[in-house]
Length: 113
Length: 113
DNA sequence: GGTATACTTAGTGACATGGCTAAGCATGAT
DNA sequence: ATCATGCTTAGCCATGTCACTAAGTATACC
Image (cartoon, rainbow over the protein chains, first blue to last red):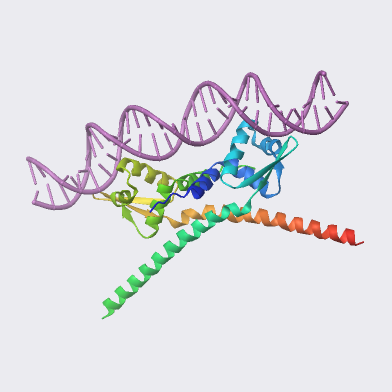
C-alpha cells in the first residue's frame, strides 16, 4: 500500500496554492508570458517564477523561450491522473455501498423468516 | 480573479501526501480505528494522528470517539469541490478550443474568397 | 554603444510540514 | 487496585514553502 506516487503528490501539491490555481485558470484561456501572468497576482517576478516552476515540474504547464520572452502554456492532459484517482476513489466507495446494500438486504431476508 | 478558496487549498494540500491518500483509500472501504490505520503506514501514532487531523480539517474524514477507540470514516462529498474545479477548468479549456476552432474556420473562409 | 525590457539567479527570513520520543490520560480487562 | 490498551499532548529537529530584495544575464531598440 501507499506506493510512491510522485506524480499525484506533485500534482496535488501544485494545485494546493490559490496563486497557482489562478495562473492555471488564466492559462486555460491561452498562453501568456511570465510578466503577463505575474501582473494580476500582485507578487514579484521571482516569486511568480517559483510558482511557474512548481507548475512545470508537476507537468501542468510547458514553457518555451522566444527571444527574451518566456511563453507559458497549459498542458490539459496533466489533470488526467487526478481525474483517474478521483474515479478510483469513487469506485471503491460505491463498491462498498453495494456490499453494504447486499448485507442489509440479506439481513432483512433473515429477519423475514 | 484568484478569490480565496480555502476549501480547495486545504483539500488539495491534504491529498498531496501519499500517506494521507493511502489512509483515505483505506477508509473508502469502511471506517477504521486510529491504530488500525497506523499499522500499514509504518509510522508512529502521533505522526498518523497529525495526518488524520489534516484530513479532518480538510473535511475529508469525520471521527467519533467511543470508549477509548476513535473511529474514522470517510466523507465522500468532500471531494465534490475538487470535481467541480476540474470541470470548470475543462469548461474554460474547451471554450477556448471552440473559439480557436471558429477562428480557424473563419480564416479558411477568408482565404477561400 | 547605451538603455530599457524580460526574465533569472542567489541569498535571506518567517513559518509550515512531517517525522520522532517521552510522557500523560482515559477506558477496558483481570 | 492494577495493568494493558488506545489514543493524546508536548516538544524537538530537519527540511520544505513562500514571500522578499538585490544583483546578474540576455535580448530588443535607438
